Image (cartoon, rainbow, N blue to C red):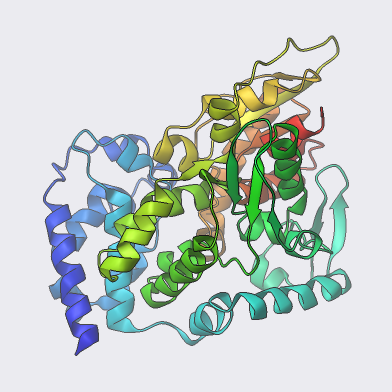
Amino acid sequence: MAAMHELLRLLGELDDQLVGCMRCGMCQAVCPIYGQTGREADVARGKIALLEGLAHEMVKDPQGVQDKVTRCLLCGSCAANCPSGVKALDIFLKARGILTGYLGLSPVKQAIFRGMLTKPRLFNTMLGLASRFQGLFTSPVNDIIGSSCSKLLAPVLGERHLMLLAKTPLHREVPSLDTKAGASGLRAAFFPGCLADKIFPRVGHAVLKVLRHHGVGVFLPPNQACCGIPALASGDRQSFEKLVRANLDVFGAGDFDVLVTPCATCTSTLKKIWPAMALGMSPQDQQRIKGLADKVMDVNAFVADRLGLIPPEPRQGAVSVTVHDPCHLKKSLGISAQPRTVLRMNPGCKIVEMNASDACCGCGGSFTLQHAEISADIGRQKRDSIKGTGAQVVATGCPACMLQISDMLSRSGDQVAVKHPMEIYAESL
């Protein structure tokens, strides 16, 4: 009965949000998937038209509706360019939750989300074991990028070039921190996110180095959980809410001015998606979410806007760096100038802008696995834009984008390093 009430509540919320769409078609011009397929069902307008009869369609063809709704990168391009202000991302996330509530979660996703992801200690242990044995199944292919491939895993992963799990994740090297504010007078809670913790710990170390340099106290609590977006994107609101509460508990013990994260997706999730998806949670949880969300900042924005950076002039012979703007930074949060300010703090680099720097790279989390061909087609366009600049390095503020861009560059045999802006700044300190 409780599950049915929750389903009806979500349907009511969805109906209230759907009426704003005017069918103007502006979303067609910016949807990366529609740009590849030209199918009306792949664009926001087409999905919203389908969702208007969701209760009926769920009975008629629930799997068909779910397939159409999940064929989306959740990049937010449609919402960022909607003249009516339709919150398409919220709509699609709620629709996925409704459909999963009706159809049930697959056994594989139950094992991943409810069996591992919602149990941070177990999740860390399992990935720690995987990191020890991954070398048996993979071979290095690009030293500059650091990518590998795997013939054994090709039936599952295709021709993808992988960034392997770090031998030692960030949470092992820096289990926790609780330092006082220095010259800045500020204390920042640090949420590395899963990818910066387990695949790119170098990004986490760069953030800590920059914060120390500027006299920012750091609160890094142990046992942090995933931000929850993988579960929510699969419609698993139960796991999402459990992960939200776990993070509220660990960060609730700290005293800090701001919570920073080097992951565009985590930043957008904590700041915007947590409050939007919390309406079914208790008033106490909603209040805690709002209190934390109000403090969340992308780490580039924090360093550039709150620490008074004054970039020096690039020195002669500076390395050319081009910048990819992650969808969840620029389109969801309006952040694009700040990563460039951070990059300019290193006088050894100069920025060379690529064409369409804010075009989606095609990752979209699990989308790249479920729709590998479309993801790669979009990714190759990003690779061409990067190569067109002649840059030696591409910088982006999203570890998920780093994975996708590394894959695309590596598959093409390109010798272009992929880094986070904070890494490049930290190299100059």
